[in-house]
Length: 222
Image (cartoon, rainbow, N blue to C red; front, side, top):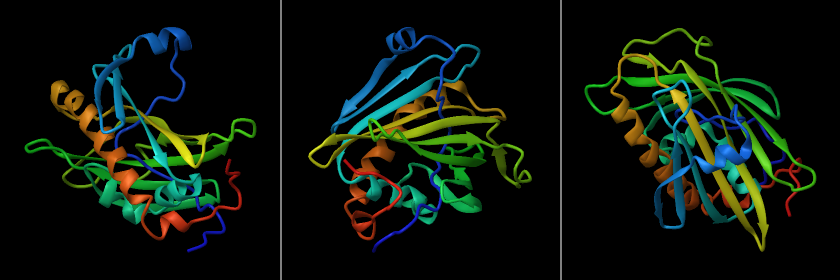
C-alpha cells in the first residue's frame, strides 16, 4: 500500500502538554520514572494547579516515520491499539496536515466513559527531521452525548525522532482534565497503563500491512 498524501493525523485518549510554563531544565528535573519495562519508559510529574499528573512515555521502534504516521492516520484502527479507546472517528479534515477526530475512552465501572474532539496538526523539523503531531482538545466541538462525560481540557503531542539505521524514538506526552466526578487516584493510576500499553501495541501494529509499506511523499525520512 503506497500512501501518497497525509490526510491529517492522530488522536489520543486523554491529553498532552506541549509547552510547560516553566523552564525546560526545571521541567525535566521534576519527572519521576513510574515504569521501565520492555524497552518502554513512562515518567510522570505533577502539574501546577491540577490534581491530575502529566505523563511522558518513550520507546524506540524499528520503523519508518511513514509507517507510524500511516497508523496514526488510520482513525478506525485506534480501538485496536490505543489503550482503552472504544470509539474513534474522523469529523473534519481541513487539509493534508490538519484534521479533527472524535474519541471515546473507557473507564472502570462505575465511572462513566470520557469523550473529546481533538484537533491534530503535523509538522516536521527540517534540520533534525523530527515529526511532531500536536494535539488540542475541542470540548465544545460536538454536543455532549448520553452516558459520556466530556474531557474538559486536552493538549499534547506525539513526536517521532529518527535515530539512524531505520530506528525511531517515539515520545507520547499527556496531561488532561477528565471532567465530571472521578477519583483522582483512579485517573493518576491510569497514567502508567494507558501510555505503556499504547506504545507496546504501536510497536506491534507498525510492522503489519498496510502500515509497514506506507510512504508519505511530504515527509523526509532519514
